[in-house]
Length: 305
Image (tube, rainbow, N blue to C red):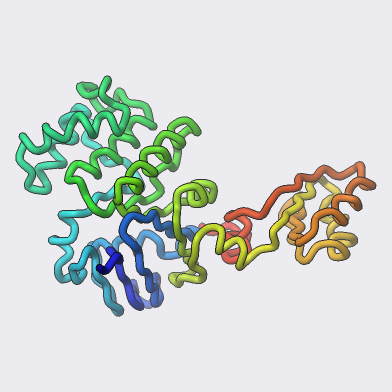
């Protein structure tokens, strides 16, 4: 049995003379959370739109839930839920009315939608707000409602474009819990995010994009093991850059200076930690390497506009 629900082979998309997606190939399996990471302008959102059949590729092949896309995208989208980057709830409707109206877009009968309402409201932790108008909800409540709305048709695949941007930690953790519940139920999630801890917690596998291309793929642990030294010592303060340029190279496999922080990447942290004990003017933090280290190594530390 084929377990791949999204397959892209060599996707290309041009806007004028600009190639925004350049040969992207992905195979996303049923029941996994797959992350698309990349700086602004990397091509993530355009890739999502291609996968959904909202724009036509200029090259490559794509299937979604067994349907050729974009030719049969409409049939595929009947089994897909979408959480957009920005909430687009109807402010004139209540929580329940937003769910009812959205279900009708999928041709669902009102009785079918009503039967799903208790589960959706419980999932979003909004049962007590079912009759509230959207403008009275907090940011976290609106985001949870947007996620619940994407589930009204009981989709097999859910696309989530930066689902927790702008939320406080409590709201983020609740949404993370809900997303893990979805994969536990066999749903497939395709997630874009700028939060590396979110990707590391939620994603079974990831693809890092830059300039329209996939530059690395694998599980979070694989990406860390394949691309970065296991230990990181961050040295910070006004003297950190000068110290790093003079001393870090003796003990670190690699180091980078960004602002007032020197990032020292090492296989064995002890020699560098001993050196820093004799540098009272410096402050430092010792930690294991993480996905953010990988992301910055692969895509650079410079700002993207």
